[in-house]
Length: 165
Image (tube, rainbow, N blue to C red):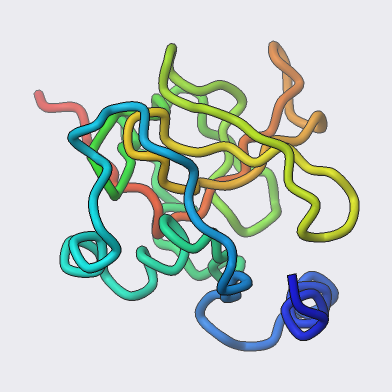
């Protein structure tokens, strides 16, 4: 990571820079897809995704806190990966963490993969969509019971599908 990238991230963490999302270092890239059908080229991902979703899902950027309408989503349903539409979280596991990003205490079974990142110098656990490898957010050990986990997700990396009926 470049010094400029680090300073941008730290500045945003300390008070926000007023930009829609924080760009990742150009060397950053999404995790590998577990499903070969989702090993798309960079050009194919750019065609599929909005610029903001591309920056987060494929380049591991971070959207500005409190910018996603999904932060306030209260209906019953499922939160899907915006890249491949794999179901990731049930609305039953969503809670208001006060962080400004949609937060969940538990993912759906077999939905996520994880890796350790050092982008803010301290190690954090990054999680991504198991199927397409798209970056979703980071998991922390300060969530509610029963898991004690906080899956802090970028809203632009999700699509909400309300329960029908």
